[in-house]
Length: 158
Image (cartoon, rainbow, N blue to C red; front, side, top):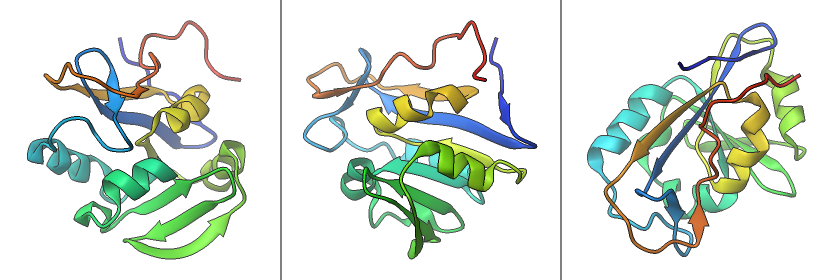
């Protein structure tokens, strides 16, 4: 059974990822398999009009320059700060930290899609109520692995 956990008055947080058969997430800063057009189309459909959160490596090496950013607010998280992109254009900065971002958006009835990488998934783990994971046929090498975050949780974050 999949639970959706609501933060505040309506912020729904969903983790989204594509992984290899053994949980492979990245190799050398990029996806270790060839991009699947269907996966990218689905990603665009699910996240249009939503907030998308990415780590700096994922943003810079996988998603930067892709047409997937139209009609989205994208948060590019790093240790120094979080950059805000609106429809692909840099519009501002936030101080670092998941809690600061949660406080900024928690009273708005929105969906926030957490799109990687591994450290961002781990940081947002207490807030994610649903995982949307695509498992690819890839079963080769990787240097970044998806944490087993989408497995059922026994307790809710407080």
